[in-house]
Image (tube, rainbow, N blue to C red; front, side, top):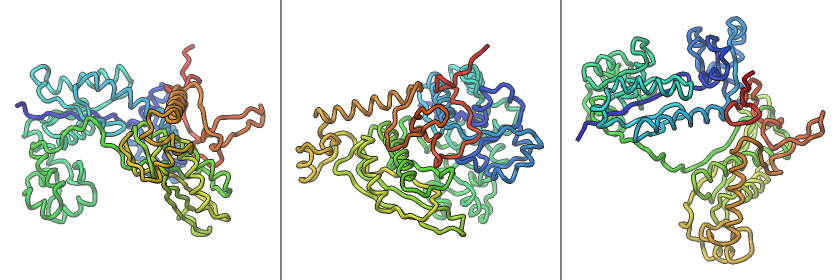
Length: 457
């Protein structure tokens, strides 16, 4: 049996790279991407990093630097990033038989048994070439016998330009040289908190951790840290996960761009979050029985009255129909709403998930399912009923249209804005709402909206 070989492919400065991809004029200009409500820096181009712009710094603290160095500023364009990520991942699936999508900009590839066809370094160089040609995104590739070492190899590929973006740690001597240079808190799965505890024990580098006694580490920490030690020594303990684990919860929430003070605005926000949560639920092919609604004021403004509350409720039978989730969320909101507060954030959380056909209703649920009540069409046991088919067909059509990029369908509860100049109504997009997330520097949806497709003159 061939020894395991993993490659970690990681996109460089992914958010910033996506923004630069459609703006050639920004190719060599420093650029930062901001968090929700344009609050903090969450991504930086290499030019911005070179200027000393720190990750997580509030935007108001670097106003002078932005002007002085002509730094381009963008709001987070999650739609663009998700679409570009999907293109990168599809390309990787063309290059390897087994791929684990680890995050929006990272993926593990299983290269076990392929070394006789192509050397690891040459394979990594080809991956960089193809991803760059097909998507325009630059990646680095780390290759090693374990996933932890592959993570470390990728770190070296990014940090040291002489590697040309590819590091192969198949050689144990190369592993030790790189581990000696890497602080222990930079090891995958360790982090700052565990790193401090390890440093107190005299374990300062990744090599120190690799040389530690695994059983001793397990006694003082956990089996997870012991597994990391074994991985650093070339023993593969973490398998590739081609299918992501099923989510246990789905949370949709946002801080408001402006404070919400009226119940109608809060209804629109909760409706918006419920619709988005339902879309995610259907994508998981699950049904939810429990929904939690929460609202709160800003804990950072002590001068204003404070209020925070949440409430959970259950559907009679699990559902993935947006209408059922909206209906329950609205009733829950009425229970916790209080006038006289300036609310800063709200959201919904779905939980208690079921697959189709596995939910066992109670006696009263069965009676409801046999009646003409709305619960009947939401029961997974009624997959073949006319009502259920209508619900499934309606939600499927809704999702298909909204994913198409040409237009959007929305629920009235999400609110309708009227253009004061034209008198035309706009969709329920959160862009039109006073409570919506602040995104003053948002780039166009270049790849997912017909109206934003670049035109070449």
